[in-house]
Length: 154
Ligand code: FES
Ligand code: FES
Image 1 (tube, rainbow, N blue to C red):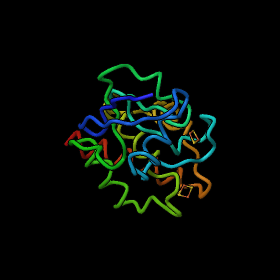
Image 2: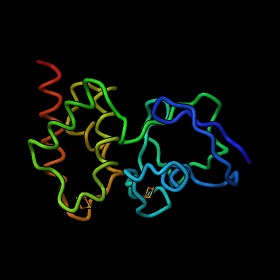
Image 3: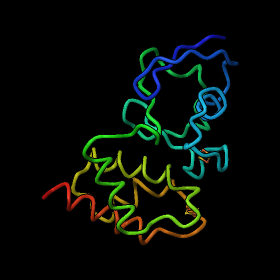
């Protein structure tokens, strides 16, 4: 079936089966490969994108479930003050190891700080617990989120 999706600010047409996960539309149809496949069952967070600003597991979001006009944002286009602060903090804290999980981590962190500018440790745990990292960068992720929050507050 044909779908028009708003992805990174532009309407994109795709012709895919209704049950095709958004992840594969992004990666295979639109060549937006920054969003990663990890588990395919909403357990690891590697595929996290924003749907109208909310962090969403694209591997478990059939394309047919999107509502018209819903805005999909991927790591390639997430922007604004919060996203810039998060990305700068990620660099400053040298967060990535292999990097595979990191686009999903960044998307979750940006959504957290947009909703909760001064997150507590519990807020960070709640927002980030669904994003797994096999390289165990969790300590640096937490430090980077706190540093981005402090910079945004200044
Ligand atoms: S690939 Fe989507 S949560 Fe793991
Ligand atoms: S940096 Fe390697 S899986 Fe997270």
